[in-house]
Length: 66
Image 1 (cartoon, rainbow, N blue to C red):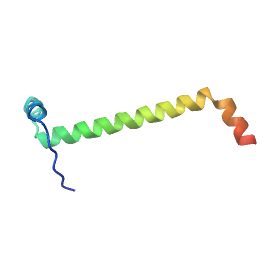
Image 2: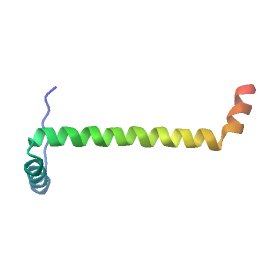
Image 3: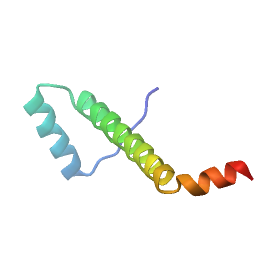
Image 4: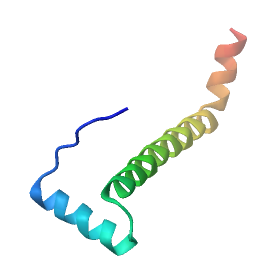
């Protein structure tokens, strides 16, 4: 799916420089950054849910039994 991404001059310059350093297109770098960001958010959510489950295991068991 195509989309337009509007960047500030500074963001575009940073993306251009990073793409040049990696010998990749700006599109490749931007797509990789999006995947990294979303993956990190999913991991953070999963870690928080696991922590809540561990910290509240007793309460969750009592709720399940009621």
